[in-house]
Image 1 (cartoon, rainbow, N blue to C red):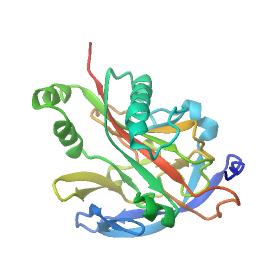
Image 2 (tube, rainbow, N blue to C red):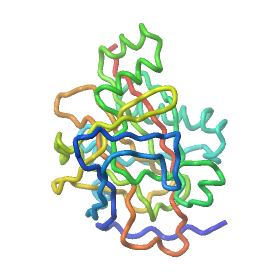
Image 3 (cartoon, rainbow, N blue to C red):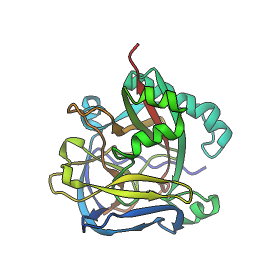
Length: 281
């Protein structure tokens, strides 16, 4: 078994990230049409070197409603994240309980998960997806309620849509520590409305929408250094409330200027997608 490298000390790093350019044409992603680096995309993009601050020292002051994400301690009973049976039997209930704990939601549903593998040869062998280089957010004001209607019976969906609901991803490494291609997160307070560019998300049998993120020097980017398997990031991708709380947060993977330390494995991670319904009792 490969020995895990010692995580780097908390620090500020630099990394290259891919941002959309608002050229007046709606960009699109085709998730079923995979390339070696991920799904096929249309649109105009630019790579930017960004300063990425380690948020681990201030993790206890962060929340879903302020920054749009937070790091939590959580040890899973799953022994093999590539085992679909374990994911559905063990991981899904764990994530439901975790999201309930941090949102107060009485009802949480999970509708899918994605494993991302940095190593190209392993990714091809296992037919997994690559880390997403393009900075994005998973939902828009149009696609979030559509997703609820897609998943729930009509009467229940309309009742749930009358109340506050959140789209929350549970992101965790499945090898440790994360020393390359980290999950990088934009503090929701530092994104301007003009930074959010609506994009189509086109499948063979349905269409969704996401937000692509345009670069803005005012944006503040965070990561959590050396993440291990007993930790998870809760990431708010949509909030139906418009009362000043964080509604979403841009996120993506960064190519770091510093090489991965010797002995550290390439990134492998899983994200579980949930909807938390805050229905009054």
